[in-house]
Image (cartoon, rainbow, N blue to C red; front, side):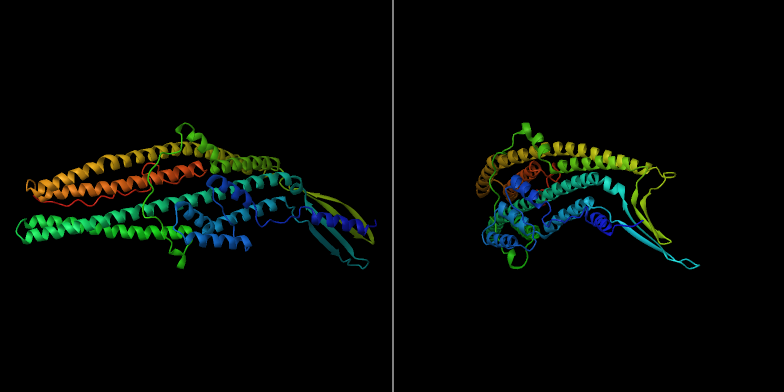
Length: 472
């Protein structure tokens, strides 16, 4: 039989070109940019050697030349953090998987030559084989990979919101420690004056050696607390540098050294849980994973008995005559009927479903706890500011008057001063706790579950000066 060479060329060309695709460089990043802008009001840039990269770098430099506020610090991190740039590459990886799912497997071409032992013409055979099921189930594979890609895009957007929240939290940590340092400097100056006055009174014989030692102890304790606060502030700054991706001369930025004053939470408790559920990017990704697992189960079920089906064309020449015909090959399911693959696919679907419901419960619990924590911190900070601080100021003033009149000893005066100092530090701590809880609550309502203990809130320090041991 004679073969039409042009027909064979067309067939071969069709097989080779079917399913070819290219991978976009900016795979799905536009969706991430839109999600982040809608939920945080900030922009992100994927550095890919474009003019936009230079514009983002210039924007970072402009922000660093001005005193940073919490929004500017978060924006610097979103534009400059290299770890986040690495996270964006997950989009490329997932997009490559989506494109790969839409590609057909390469056809297999084979040839054989037979040499007759008794002479005569050569026997030739050619075949081209394509995996047929791979073509048939291409839409289903693309559906699975598409759902996985959407899940990846949502997780990348969640990582961006996580970074912004981490920067905001660390920013407030640093402001709290800067305010604590400023407060302790005033304490050191005050206790230094008191210790010097005590030494003079002791030299004049007006107070005892024990009294001057107590004044000196309070002064030295305050100096120790000051050094600790200075160390914490340096650590806070370097953590913020790391989050913003800064080094070298770019680390010379400044911030306001005090926490903002409190204001009421702009969140109504009635719909907080529903808002958090609807906004959750993790739940969105989990839904896509359920969709992918469902499609994967359908694919596994359809291909359980016959996972491979190869079809093609064979051409053979014997004794100078060509013979051409179709070919078909598939495994016989004698020993493996795909039971294990089906069990695994069903388990994966159940796992995805259970994870989804668990995440929903965790989101609801976390948002309730965070709102309570923020309200509690707000109320406690106001109580310290409006009740305890004025009260301890009155106590110190009256105690000083009684001490000057020699009606009480130095111990009562020192104790009153220490209580006043600790109340001032406690106010800074509760104010910091309020802002950290607010950041975590905003993060959760923006779509990313805050990764903090909603009860203890990130190891808030007590701030109290160590008590001075007094032996009567």
